[in-house]
Length: 491
Ligand code: HEM
Image (tube, rainbow, N blue to C red; front, side):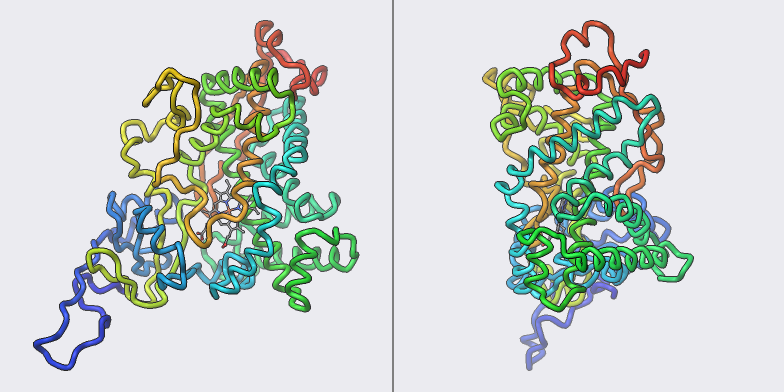
C-alpha cells in the first residue's frame, strides 16, 4: 500500500454531493521514507531506523516489511491515545504472516478481537500480577543464585546470553509447571524456533523459517506428551488455559509458545545487556555492591519488597539497561478504519503502523545531552545524584512519559512484573558479588537486533576474584561465598 502520496486525498471522508461543498483533503502525513538501500536497516538496527524515519516527529510515513508504506508513531501521548482502546481508536494488531505462523494465531498477542483478547489476558493475568510475582521472588532469586554460583565457579568463560536464556527458561518453566527434564529439550527447540523469524520468511525445509516451523511441531508434540501425562499442577496456568479453551488444544499450545517466546527471549536479552553494561562500567558495579551491602545488613538475604525498595540504584540500573538497549523497539499495528490524528492528519484504513517505543524514549528532552551513555543516575533523584539532587535520601525519580519499555495500552506487557523480578534478582546478586569479583567480557562481539537484541558470540564473560580488600568485604551468604573453594582461580 502506498500512503496518499502524500498529499493525495484519501477516500475518507466520503465525497459530498456538490463540488462546492467538497471537503478539503486531509493534510499530507510527513514523509520519512528512506532510500530503498536503507530499508533493510529496519531488521539490522530497528531502533535507529525508527529514528531515521521519524526524525523527532510525532508521526511520519516510512517503509516497513517488504517496503510497504507504514505510518510510524513516535509520540508517547499519541501512542497512548491510539493504543489505549483498540475498539475506540480503530487500531488493531498487524504482525506479519510469518509471526502468525510461528507463534500461532490463538496466542494472546495475536488475538485481534478486542473482547477475546481481553478474556485471554484475564486468564493469564493472575499468574503475572505484582502479588503473584512477589510470591515467586524466592524461587526466582534462588534460580539466579544457582546460575551465578555456576558461572563464578567456571574456570572457562561462560556464555552470558546462553546462561541468561537458561535462567529465564527455568523461571518460566517453573511458572508453567513443566518438569525439569523437559527443559533442555524445549530450550534447544526454542533456539531453532526463534531463528525462524529471520528472513527470508518462506517455510522451506532449508530456510530458517522452515526449520523454525519444524521445531514448532516438535515443541507442540512435546507439549502434547506433557498434557497426556497429566502431571501438570491442577491450579496452574496450563490447567487454566485448558479449562478455558476446552477441546481447542491448539489455542493452549499457541498461548504457551507465546508466553515462552515473549517471556524468555525478551528477558534474556535484557539481562545480557545488563551484564554487559555492568562489565563495561566497574563504577556502577561498585555502587551496586555498596548498596547491596547496606541492603544485606538491613534486610538480610531475601529480596522482599522492602529489600528491593531499599535499593533504588539497582532499579535504576534495570531501567537504564532497558532505555539504552531497548529489547522491543516497537510494535506493529494496522488501522482497521481511517484514523484521524490531531491536526487533521489521517491514517488510511488498512495502513500498517509501527509504534516506535524506542524513538519516544530517544526524544525525551531531559536525556538529550548524554542519551548514548549508560548512566543509571538519570533515574534517581535526591542524594546529590546529579539532576535535581536535593541532598536528601536518594530515591527513584518519576519515569518520563516517553519511557515505555513494556509497551503502552491494551497490549501492555503481561509479564512486566516477572521480567522486573528476574532482572531485580540478577542485579541484586550481581551487586552482592561485585564487592569480591570483577566482571570481565572476553570478547564483546557484535550485537544483532533482529528478531531480538543479542550478542552474536553469546558474550563470553567471566568473574575474576578481586584482591584481599574486596574479599574482606564479601558478605556472608553471598553467591561468592556459596561458590567459595570452587572459584579460587588466580585473577
Ligand atoms: C525485559 C523483558 C520484557 C520486555 C522489554 C517486554 C516488552 C513487551 C512489550 C513492549 C510488549 C507490547 C507489545 C505490543 O504492544 O504489541 C509486550 C507484550 C507481551 N509480553 Fe512482554 N516484555 C518482557 C518480558 C515479558 C515476560 C517475562 C513475559 C512473561 C510471560 C512477557 C509476556 C508478554 C505477553 C504475553 C505480551 C502480549 C500481551 C498482549 O498482547 O496482550 N513479557 N512485552
